Amino acid sequence: PSSTPNTSPHLPPPNKQTNATSAYIFPGLALGIISTGARRVTDRQMLAAAKTLANTLTDDELRAGRVYPPLENIQKVSAAIAAGVAG
Image (cartoon, rainbow, N blue to C red; front, side):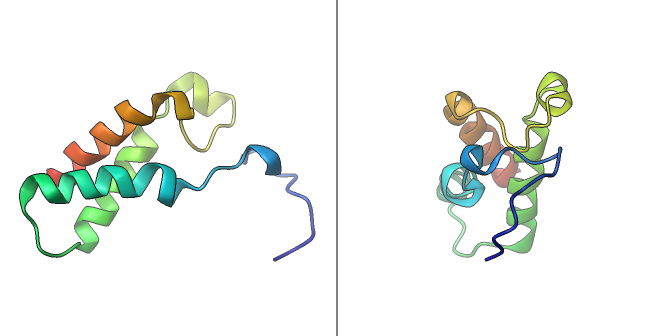
């Protein structure tokens, strides 16, 4: 890993970054897969999860430079991801 600090205006400060895969993607992905009875995770499902996560950000959050929605919205985001994966 690089020791260079994150100075990008498009990313949260290093102490504010979250793990999107564990916190956001996996819960919604799993719920969507379980609800459809799928036996495999497809590229389409992974892409749907990623796109849905990105689309949960509000315009205000995007303008503020957020990369992920606030963790306070995790249940709503997970449900949206599950619906997107179940498609």
